[in-house]
Length: 306
Image (cartoon, rainbow, N blue to C red; front, top):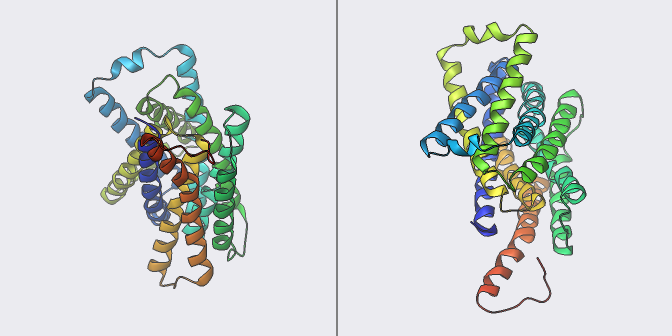
């Protein structure tokens, strides 16, 4: 699998993310957010280990070194547990799913910085131009936010932690399959969150869940499974900066769904913001795609070097 197929998978992740954040913002309001995200992540971990076993890839787990298991546990801690607890608590009390979606998408900024520092990723002028469009587009969407309180702070901290986790996962993906990294994230993450529930006396609340609660856990769990499956498989072949930029395409989806279901018309700022986000992502990944296509036809592009 090459970069182009990896980008397609990450694009699928962005679409899933757009719907998922919108849906979760409603579902979590009827739950204890900590119980909800713990069970959802545990559901995904079970789903992933089932896929690994069904595909006969259990040997990939058996071959992992102690150091790799430690890094998977770290991915689970900084990516699969603490930020999930903060994000879904914030999502329960935040007033706008679009705002949460925007702040969550600042992962792009932090991940790019971390990738440049720790992975030595190269950033070119075309990427910077696309990044400027992304930031401007998100600013236009964000400009209507009148408050920046605890929920927004928690989402922002979660985004920074997820960015750090993505960089660590990318490092692991040099030697480990994407499905294994996704499993490690969800398995260890769910384990840490179960310990949190037990330590805070919330574990017994699981027994009070209704059939409807379990149904929503399953539905949102499927979306999360598709998210981690597509993202970590694609991330193996795509730079962190590009992959996280593509994820911003989920923001217009979340924003449009929020407006439609709240009865709010899409304003001028929102329309321009959505357009700039789409243009920014296309600028970042489009030139690379066409350059590789022309190269395969024997045509060089001296102006762009990827």
